[in-house]
Image 1: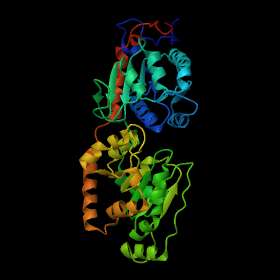
Image 2: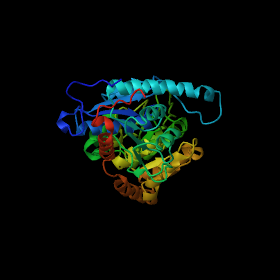
Image 3: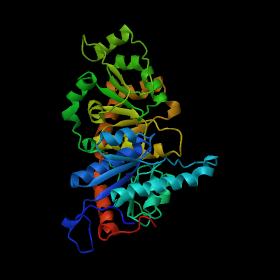
Image 4: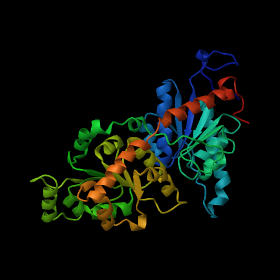
Length: 414
């Protein structure tokens, strides 16, 4: 059975002019977490910027963040059954193959209905079914954002058309190292031009040095407790805070004494109260959050590290202590460049924040102030080229090499 075609838009036979062909149809597979979804959406934006007629859809599951993030960015979302891959022997292994077959079948239906030319995978629950559904049917492009590749991408890379990675040593053979795509509003962010607007948007002090605390889309309790516990010290040092705690988390700030406020006023401007410590559940406007900040403290997920590098901010990373250690590895490039350093999760306390973070921003310690200036300078050098545009070009080239762009492909139901 042939996949559906739009009259007069299919490629027909080889040799047809490009003007006669239908728009490129791309299926993105990167659901589950923001670390998989945001790079996929960045590539989608780049593809659309290059060709507004391109047809783009994303695979997802009913319980992933993609149910919110994908429609918000204006792209179609196609839901398939989730297939988590067990990391160790469990009863889930007994049902893995039937669940995987069901997800592959659902994905092939999406591919047929949408006349898909290329599948672009970023890992996560939906990636493996997408790779297996597309195998020997359409080209597959894989991007690995983490320093150590996940299982889905390791499997898919064995038969993918093109494999790209954020850093060297991901574990994917012959991967082209290009970095991580970030959304255009961050890749081209002018922090200085937006600073005043950003500070006003969040209710921050327009002039005080400001720390952005970002524990990922769900927040991080360890980070929440340690940084909020140092609220009096932030006030005393005249440092403002924008703290994204996570939608399900609550923060109770310790009281700021009058002595702290007086100290802040004397260390900043006479008669001025302590800068606000602003707590928000989630940051929908990361562009404004980055524009408002002078320094970031947070986890070192691959996407977070890429975005911080792209906007040129110095950072203090607190790697998640679980998994295979990839979060610490994600930050290696910025650490080596001198724009970031690490505080281990176990060592992150209110005292550590007061001793290692606040002096960077307060200016009270000449050595810390000099270190911070060096971090700021290094941060301007770690951002790179437009990775989204480069990966979009790779996707387009892979699609053009596939059989469906030049013939009436009959391989969907085999």
